[in-house]
Amino acid sequence: MGAAANAPPIRCRLYFYTKTTDVPDMQRLFLVVASSLALCALPMSAPAATRSAAPADGPASSAPPPIGQQIAQTISLITGVAISPLLGMSAVGAWTYLKAPPERRPHLPWFANPWFWMLALLLVALCFAKDTVGTAAPSILKKPFDAAETVEHKISGLIAAGLFVPIAAAIFQAPGAEGASLSGTGLAMIDLHWLGNALLVPVALAAFVVVFLASTAINILILLSPFTTVDAALKGFRLAVLGSVAVSAWANPWVGAAWALVIIVIAWFIAGWSFRMFHFGSAYLWDFFTLRRHRFQPDPSGNWLFLARRLGKVPVRTYGRLVRDAQGGFVLGYRPWLIFPERTLPLPSGPYAVGRGLIHSEVVELEGDATRSLLTLPPRYRSHEAEIVRIYGFVGVRPAGLRAALCWFRSALGFRPKRQPALA
Image 1 (cartoon, rainbow, N blue to C red):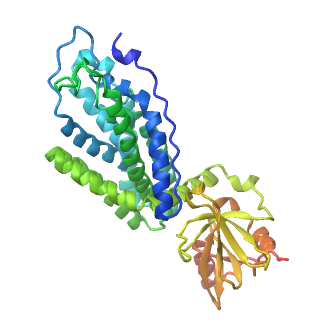
Image 2 (cartoon, one colour):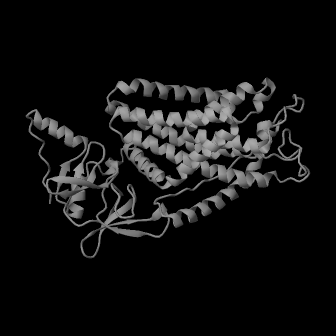
Image 3 (cartoon, rainbow, N blue to C red):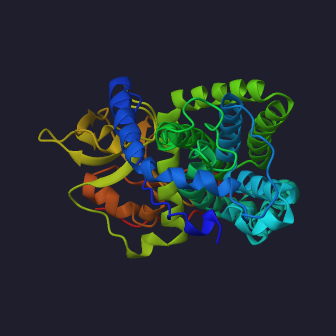
C-alpha cells in the first residue's frame, strides 16, 4: 500500500476565544494559541508525503517549485479557502483529481475524492441558485435558507481547519521522499521536515482562523439583514474578494501572496469584532434551530445577553451577565476574550423596557417617547419578556423592530392592537 494508507491520523484540537479589542490581552492570547497549535502540529508532517504518494512503479513526477514559491501559493490557497471553505476545498479537490494521472488518483487526499468534491460543488451550486433566485423573494422567506447556509459555512470551516489546512500547509517533506522540498539542499541528509511543518502549520492555521472569522461575520450580517439588496451586496463583496485572491494567485504567485497577506492583516485587526459576530450568530442559530425558548427559563439572579451598542471602551455585542449591584443599579459582568478575569460595566441609569421582536427581543432605554437599544436578548428569551420585566423591574413590554412596524401597520388600517399582559 502507498504512504497515504500508512499515514497516521491527524488529531488537532483548536481553541480560539476572542472578545474585546484590548491589545495586551489579544497579544497574550495569540501567544497561547500559537504555542498550543505548535504542539498540535508536531505529528502533522506525515500528510506532506500524502500529496506526492504514488505506487512504487508509478511515473516520476516533475520537480516541485522552489520552497518560497510553494509558501506563496499556500498563503493564497489558505486565504481563499478561509473565505469560502466549501467552495475552496471542493475546487482544490477537483483540480487535484483532474490533474493527477489515473494511477495516482487512489492515493490522493480525501478532499480530492470525487464523492466529496462533486457533492460539495453541487451544494455550492444550490447556494448560488438560492442567492440568484432568492433576490426577488421576500426576505422573511429567504432567511431560513440563509441560516442553513451559515450553518454549512461554520461546519465546513471547522472541517477545513482540522483536516484541510494541516495537509495544505505541510509542504516540507522527509529527505528521500518523492518531490521532497529539501532534497536539493545541503540539508538533504538531515530530517528536519517536521520542524518546518511544526512552524508553518500553526501560522497557517492562525491565518485561516482570522480570515474565516471575518468571512463568517459577513454571513451573520447577511442573516441579520432584513433587506435582500443588502444581502446581495454583502455576498457580491465576499465573492469579489475571493475572486481577487484566485486571479492574483493565478497571474503571479508572489502578487497573490502579497494580496492574501493584506487580507490576513485586515482580518487580524478586526478579529475581535469578527468573533463577537461569530459568537452572536452561533447563539442566534442554536436558539433558533433548537427552539430553545420552549425549554428555557430566565434566571432571577442574572441573565446572559449581548451589548447592543458600544459603551465606553466595551464594544458592541459583548457577551455578559446582567445583574443588579448593591445600590440597585444595573451592571453587566463580562470576561474579555471569554477567558480572562471578569470585568464589570455599569449601565446608564434611567428607565428601561423590553422591546419584543419577531425573532429576538431587546432591552431598550427610554428617552421620552423614543427608545434606544441597549442590550440584545438571544432568541431563547423570546416569549419570556414579561419574566425579564418582573426580574429587573423594567417599565414594561413594547413592540420593537419588525413587530413595531407590523403594529403600526395594523393601527394604520384601523385594527385594534393586541392587549399586552398585565405586569407586576
